[in-house]
Every structure is written in structure tokens, then in C-alpha cells.
Amino acid sequence: MELVRITGLPDDPLDAAAAFHADWTSRLRAAEADLLLAFPAANHTHRGWRLAAMQMLARALAPRRINAVVGDDAAALAAARDYLAHAPGLTGQLISLDDEGAGAVLPPPS
Image (cartoon, rainbow, N blue to C red; front, side, top):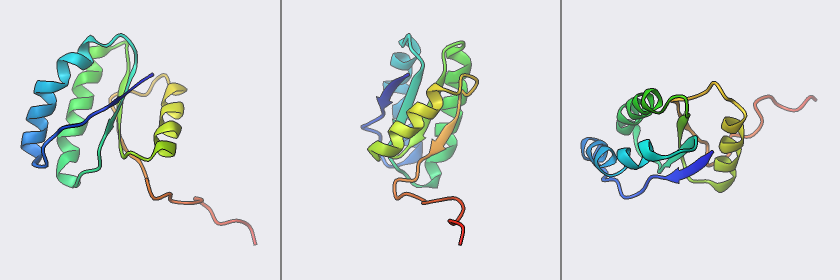
């Protein structure tokens, strides 16, 4: 699974969507490997266009897979990449990483 860091997008969500499609889509469609995109953190107004882009690209790239994460923590990216590499049915997803570290899901037994 090839990691592609998406950079250089404007802060405005409409402008960012336009720039992503203009600057990145053709390169991503030409890739021969499964892809994991890493978007930088952004506010909630970017979630809709990012998810729609992943869903459309997943349809266009099948049977290759494409997923995206939001965040830039190296450990979180590595864990997401490993998980997705072992989840062959998962494609077209946008996953927000917890760069702060959420900790254990359940507290340790007392």
C-alpha cells in the first residue's frame, strides 16, 4: 500500500476540493498500487468533499483500493497503514486519526 501525503490545498473547503481534483486526481488514477492518502488536519467543513472523493476514486480504481486518513502523527499513520494493508475489503474510506493518542478503550481491571 503506497502512502501519498496530500499537500498544498487551500484552507477554504471549496477551493481545496477544486485543487485536489485538479492537482491530484489524475496522478492517483494512474497509480498501480493500492493507495493510502494522508490529508492534513482540517476543520469539519472538509470532511464531505474528502469522503466523496474517496468514494468516487474507489469506484474508479477498483479492484485497486484507496483509502484516506486525516492526521500526520507518524505512529498513527503507520498503524493505519498496517491495518488497511490487512483489510482487503476496505476501500473508499476516510478515517480520522487521533494524533493525541486516545489511550485504552477500556480501563485496566482494578
